[in-house]
Length: 298
DNA sequence: GGCACGTCTAGGGAGTAACT
DNA sequence: AGTTACTCCCTAGACGTGCC
Image 1 (cartoon, rainbow, N blue to C red):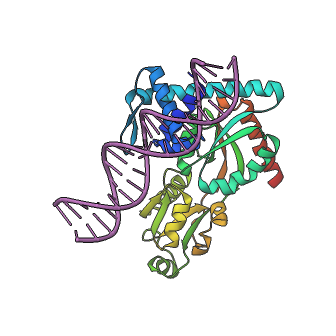
Image 2: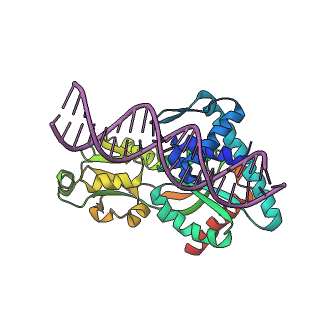
Image 3: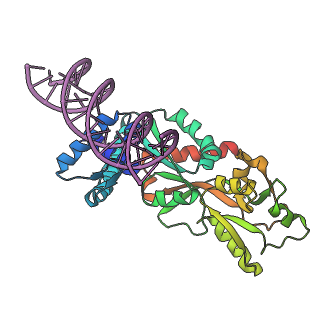
């Protein structure tokens, strides 16, 4: 058994696609296929069901995937600790960030980290902002960019980076939604809303509606801020996004801030890390960069 | 020389779009 | 609806390379 085979299997389980997984492992599909086959032969059971069009994990494959991740994680930890003792920080830091967080938050941290620890491999996983904290809790990643929730899980530590107000945005173009907003006092019960799914912002706006006794009209939901911006710019409704996201977005010219909207508590954005992983040299090194970057940018 | 592991290439199964 | 051509995907075989 070798760690290379395990890495290939984990990559394949994540992509469920031989070609994509082999590309990510920097191998030809052929060599990759045989590596997986060898692993299956070694284990004496199939981990995957191959079809001519798709690949699925068998029950054994799903069970083995969790083990494989654990083994690789322990291996990385051991490597990282030995590396620190010998000659500095080495290993891999796994980061989860939404696409917008990549250019607004990671853009500040990664150059600093890269400069200090060129030997560390950086693995960035992207997805919806609401997926970040679960990824940290499941230890799929070491750190995740999150908006600090009102209640933070006890096993998680939060390293703040910046604070940003939540702003309501409306379409820039003339449309039915714009006309609803232009007629003096806004009737918030009638305005179609595009809201984020499963995020602190959602809790805050719903709390405000409850307090005001308003039943909102939720036209759409999105798991990412860029999707909200896109829907708003197309005239679908009024959205709620962090100001930081709006400033950096290529879609910002299609929308505008609703000045007379309710004021919600601002977002505190930063990195979440599981406490038991925070002591790992590579994670510690990354978090030091987070703190230093905050110090530099204020 | 034997072995392990890689690439290159070809083959076969299946989906899809265009055409009749 | 049936046929054809194209494309995608995974796998097997041939062969090259590096190490012992």
